[in-house]
Amino acid sequence: MTRLGEYRHDASEASARRDTPQQPDPRPGAYFVSVIDPDSGRAFIAAGPWPTHAAALAAVAPVRSRARELSHRASESARRLTVWGAFGTCRLEDADTAPGGPMNDLLPADHRPPARPWPADPAPTRLDVIRARRAAARAAVTGTAPDPPRWSA
Image (cartoon, rainbow, N blue to C red):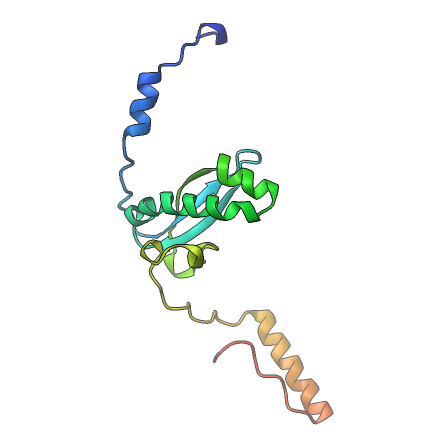
């Protein structure tokens, strides 16, 4: 085991790792540009989704530069995040339910993720059905029209 005082950093190895481009992930899914807060370790989605990992990797630098351009108007913690945060990519397997990133509209048009159709309304939950029945019963008693359900049948 190397003791802390005996440790020597090999700068050539670190620079070789830094200069090697990351290989894109071939798996399907929704890919995002994310930021990891160095203070808390929490990850935040900045932009996306892109259909391929290669497209998300290409968007990391533009997202980082745009975030830094906008950081002068942000809070102190947001400014620290854009300077010291680790920008990278992440993947969500279920591309149909992937949310849009908050910076999508702030990016230049050539770096925005492709537009996609809005996901279909989810099926009603048991609670939605109960609320609809109660509203119909209330409307029958009061003689008013029931509120329309919050889902499409």
